[in-house]
Amino acid sequence: MKKIFFLIGYLSTFTAFSQTLTNQQYRTDFDYFWNTINDNYAYFQKKGIDWNSLRPVYQAQVDTVSTRNGFVRILEKAINELYDHHCSLNTNTPASSRLIPTGTDLWASYHDGKPVIDEVRIGMGADKVGIQAGMEIMAINDLEVAKAILPYLAHTRTAEAWNFALRLALAGNHIDKRKITVKTISGTRDFFPDQDGLLLEHIEYPAMVQSKTSHEIDYIKINNFLYDNQLIPRFDSVLNASLEKKALIIDLRETPSGGNTSVARAILGRFISKEQCYQKHELYAEERETGIKRSWVEIVSPRGVTYNGKVVILANHWTGSISEGITIAFDGMKRATVIGTELARLNGAVESFRMPGTKIGFNISTERLYHINGTARECYQPAIKVSMANQHPGDDPILAKAIDFLKAKKDF
Image (tube, rainbow, N blue to C red; front, side, top):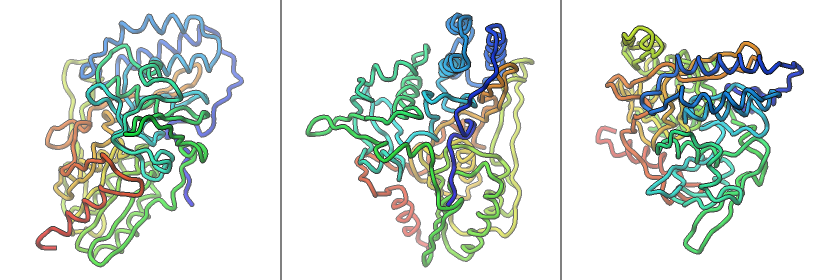
């Protein structure tokens, strides 16, 4: 049994440091944190954030901080001003919010001013207790939603910022069990997604790669190990057993934590017979410093025996970061049809930095990423979108749509 302790980028246990830092050291670290984000974060313009105008708000708090946990809380609030699920600290306290999408089993957003569940993560606590897409959220831990999201709401009040705060509030922290109150036809109803324990803290998978075979269509599910090069031989082994099948479904719906491009290119390389461009990059820091845009296109090369049959990629809100890159690459190279919901919509490629005094690390998006047709990766939409409204526990409308799509092909 493979076990992954979320969160990627977080420490595996809550960090307890014996070091004692002076307030001046916290100030120095804060300067490094703030200036690094100012100089390298690639999405200020898109989000309409005046970063420097926010500095006095947090500088005043840092000026009085005396503990590491207190400093972490300030940094968490500050980085939430980016309202970007791809930006985070590499440490946490028990009261810290879980990371999105890795640490949540609910995806929600505002629709006509109402907070609504868009999708439920299959097999996790929310799914097990019967929460369904389409439900309107009335309260979180007995706080009406408008109050529950306030600790996570950025000063820049865009629609994206409200959705960001809503998802963090729904995800909860690392120690408290959640109570989610929703509106139903017969009135309000309470759900307790953590009633069987904090499942999101220790997600278990049967294997890195799972597969099912049938007469003509094989199914391969890649689990949340795209950061581990050991996934490559596991994937090769499964794919090699399916080379003669007419069609293949690759499920990327449980890959929220990102990974590395070596694993991505290794997977993609099994489906092409010649080199192809698969993703475009733009480096913000160089453009900011010189006024000259720097961009490049990344190439993937064939690897091993090529699978030549039809391919469908399954994607959803837990298809995050590098798996979003794999998804748009399959689409851009015209090697697969993507079926599902919107993806995690994580902004760009992240780079890690580390503060000199506390040694606290943080990740921010420093490169903008694009589909080879020029569409920003975070704006990509599946070729065939599937509505999750009124999905019942145990149903899998995305997989069902993929099977129907492949069977409808005339030459299948």
